[in-house]
Image 1 (cartoon, rainbow, N blue to C red):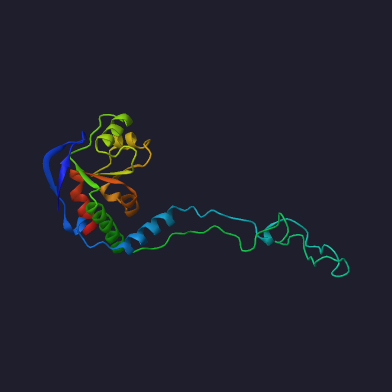
Image 2 (cartoon, rainbow, N blue to C red):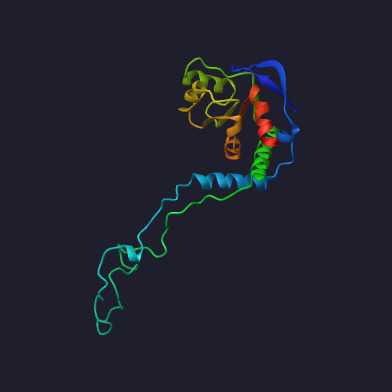
Length: 209
């Protein structure tokens, strides 16, 4: 597969980049994508939810009134979960929602996600992205020229670039990652995936090893 290479001005450079069919042209596995996205979202959950149960609230265990003869229902303790302000029955407790997923499944999911984006024409290869200083306005201008203004975008770099990261961090819906950090959720969540030309080789190497 070959794609046009664009500059940050949104214009074609006249050159083309060759993308491996083993990464961008496979038969997509939607179930692998679902599993990887599910794991990603599960790992993001804090799991710190907690409510008080019957044994954890303060209050006397004295029987409120005699069993019979009052005309009312039987009440054993003021800590009854049925009372207003009482505890919760089988309430949530702190837990870890994460689960294990094999590396091969995760790689398959990322290749499937990239294949979907490639088929939809949502992938653009950039010649280079270089900023001399953190400039949000410059990065936003680049997105506008690439027809991604106000849309979710994912930029894949070959290595960490602080100027680019700091320029993009205040723009809603914008993600900047290195080739080694690409995940299925970010790919599927983006309306457009921008890959810098020198990031193609490490990205393909990561997903085909």
